Image (cartoon, rainbow, N blue to C red):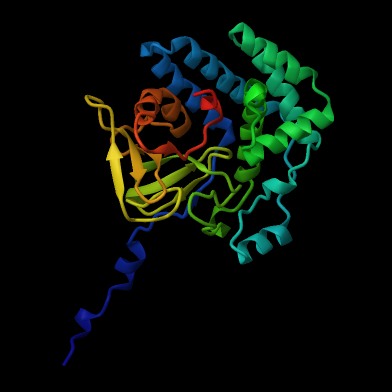
Length: 304
């Protein structure tokens, strides 16, 4: 005869922690944290001039957030339709150069003008500031489609910086609990690819992995030891620079021959995915010598 003492305790079941599927960005602090992290890398890097330039650009992103006009609220019907068809909540294909995005571009370009930069970068900033509406709209489409003309990469970096701010603010207005998986290597908020993945140690996520969106900075839960690009669990390996602290590695895939960095935030809580991706460029340079191509996207590494 079974004792009632052997029945599951509902209070214990309710206390079992489960990681959230998605964590939305906080635009008010996101870029400030990112810039500070990159300044730490710049202080000890042979690429200090470039890292300082990018950190200054990220500080410009941070500076403009409080003064931007509000983003349009999400369309409830569009959100439910996206959810039903397992599509990203924000449709990048329908992104328009509206007043809010125009203001974001203008304010970012104005703030960036105060950043110390190489002459070539300054010339590119002048060109993008003087560009008319149709040209800017095309550059927005280019960035969102990752179809960037090689001869105009520098101009597109500034546009991408503004779009990071714009989409972080749009993603922050979503309901994280309503987001659903939409495919391997695809952000459930905006459809962007990951810049890296993080192994975290949070109260409700012990050792879980989250991919970090390269555009809106949403984090989404993703199985460990699985390719962030093609989704396979076969042929997954890890490479790192000899003598490194082991907090950032290249997760390689023998199926699609790509790699995406995995960052162990559970070992170093100061890791910030975009900043640490830039700061560990030496790992990318090492990986170039092998058979794997980079699958992650980072607008600040377009020239590398």
